[in-house]
Length: 260
Image (cartoon, rainbow, N blue to C red; front, side, top):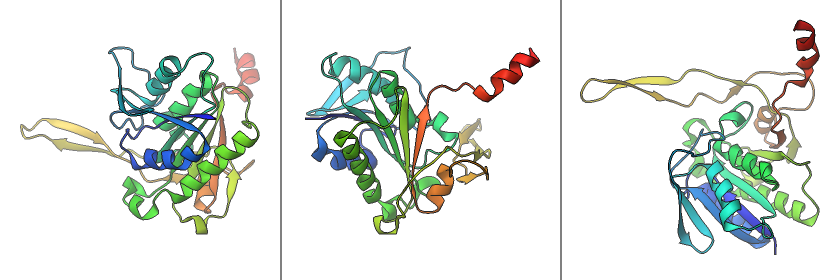
């Protein structure tokens, strides 16, 4: 039986995680290790300054008190599995909201997949795109995302993972019904337009504090090469982007050597 390890950054109680469990249980033995609290935008952070504890909610379903997605995968691979019993794949998600363009660097969802491939286990990060603040998530649901991840994992199990080591698939599902979907597109990461939605407030004692908000999902036109993840989702395609962890700007090495 294939072994599947799941995590997310929305917390162990998130609807997207429960949908992911439902989608993948028919394909193998599912183990879940998820954060106790929402860890959105925690990036690839590892907890080094306090102890962490597995809390078993039911068989093969744990919350990590109070861990990040990276903690969840790191500790699960080292404590719930042994060297002869590693999962066949790690899936991180289904995230509530997009993880496209440079948002991948912020994403706790992507970080769960990053940690898996660093540890030698194939991985997919999957996100359900929705409107600002995801107020329409109840209408969108996770049906298309469930169909998507089931199809991809089954294809991998029937063959092999399509990427070399230290690379993962980043999947973004458009906010539409399965019937309206135009199919899947292999994409490149686009360029997000970022604003500054930091709101100032005052507590009852008059002390000023700030709350970082969520900017609109806007992107730049970047011609050339493959379609971007933003463009694909906007055209009602499921976006599948291969991501690697080598952040070197290879095109700039020669010019920097000349500059130096």
